[in-house]
Image (cartoon, rainbow over all chains, first blue to last red; front, side):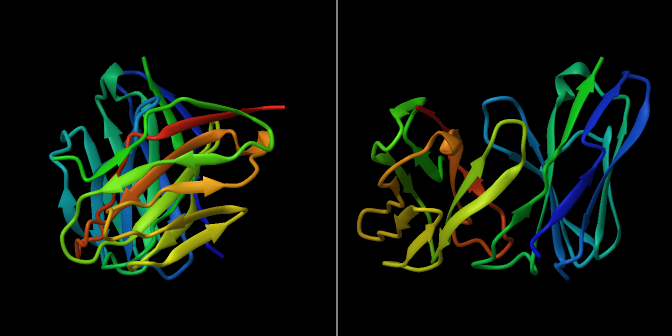
Length: 114
Length: 113
């Protein structure tokens, strides 16, 4: 089983709202990732968690707040977003975050900020 | 600088045509190379991968060979189908220990019946 699940599938929020994206995997992976993908562009890395600790933050604005409550779950808390934050948010996981590993992606959450 | 250079699309083919999507990479160490596919409205799916020189990854009729001498990982399929219409991304971890992936720009493939 190489499944990564993400909820919700679609999300519409106003600039004053607070919402959360959720990602889950049951492959025993200890590295999890958040990516942002704009239309017709490749995914851009936002955050990497390794063994439930944040190991990479790609200078993401503080209105995005990641959380890894356990080894299977990854959340992305959203607050005071801007319309330009509208994008597809992809979660991925890999075994440990090391060399020669494959990242497995979820289906994404399509976010629209009004 | 760019880690992955992918041929510019879009690519439009008739069904049963031969497909090549070029990908070259720059990296230190011993990178792994990947092709991901993204169907309309979906996330990325791993299509194939190769972890060392001369390895050939293959899946669903697609193939790519890790060529260290030309730093290339071109994607090929002998006979495309309408259902292969998607965006294809070449990626490398550039030999990094952090598992960070570097993606090419993506190539849109459209196959007509």
